[in-house]
Length: 210
Ligand SMILES: *[C@@H]1O[C@H](CO)[C@@H](O)[C@H](O)[C@H]1NC(C)=O
Ligand SMILES: *[C@@H]1O[C@H](CO)[C@@H](O)[C@H](O)[C@H]1NC(C)=O
Ligand SMILES: *[C@@H]1O[C@H](CO)[C@@H](O)[C@H](O)[C@H]1NC(C)=O
Ligand SMILES: *[C@@H]1O[C@H](CO)[C@@H](O)[C@H](O)[C@H]1NC(C)=O
Ligand SMILES: *[C@@H]1O[C@H](CO)[C@@H](O)[C@H](O)[C@H]1NC(C)=O
Image (cartoon, rainbow, N blue to C red; front, top):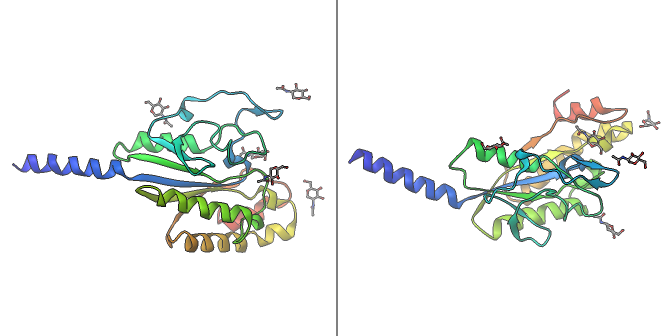
C-alpha cells in the first residue's frame, strides 16, 4: 500500500513537472546570439551534438510562437548579422540531460550583436523587446521563468567612462527588469566577460568576478 502511494505520488509529480515549461531568457551581445562556426559572415552549418535539436527544447520565435529550437537560435532575432552556434542550445541540452523530470525547456532569444550596457537600460529598444518577449513567453502557456542568461560587456571595455559606469548601469538594468517582468528574485546567470579591449578588468569588477 505504501509502495503504491509512492508510485502514485511519483506519477503525479512527473505529470505536474512535465506540464511546466521552464523558461530561460537569453540576452546580451554577439557571444550570446552565437558566433560559433561563422567565418566571413557565413555560418558553416555544423551543429555539434550538444547543440542538437530535441522535441523538449522550444524557442519563442520572432513572431512570439513556440517552435522547436534549432541552431542558429538567434537567426530571426539578431537578424541583421550572421548568427551561428551560441550557448543556448548546449545549456538546454545539458539541463535536460541532468534532470529527467524537468519537462520542456523554453528558450527566449533576445541577444543582439555589438551593444553597450546603456542600450539595455529601461526604455531602450533592446530592453523593451526583452520585457515584451519575457511576458509573451509566460502568458501563452503554463510556463515558469527560471532565469536569464546574460553575456554582455565587451563594448563597454573600450572607454574608461563606459567601463566605470558599467556596474551601476548593470544593477539598474537588473532591478528594472525584475520589476517589469514581475519576478523580484529572478535568477540572473552571468558569463564572466572573456574578451574586451582597454578596460576589461573594470567591467569584470562590476560583475564581482575580477
Ligand atoms: C565574443 O565575441 C567577440 C566578437 O564580438 C569575439 O572577438 C570574442 O572572441 C568572443 N568571445 C568569446 C569568449 O567567444
Ligand atoms: C575569409 O576572407 C578572407 C579575405 O577575403 C580570405 O582570405 C579567407 O580565406 C576567408 N576565410 C574563409 C574560411 O573563407
Ligand atoms: C536592421 O537593419 C534594418 C535595415 O538597415 C534597420 O532598419 C533595422 O533597424 C535594423 N535592426 C536592428 C535591430 O538593428
Ligand atoms: C546529452 O545526452 C546525450 C545522450 O546521452 C548526448 O549525446 C549529448 O551530448 C548530451 N548533451 C549534453 C549537452 O551533455
Ligand atoms: C582603447 O582601445 C582602442 C583600441 O581598441 C584604442 O583605439 C583607444 O585609443 C583606446 N582608448 C583608451 C582611452 O585607451
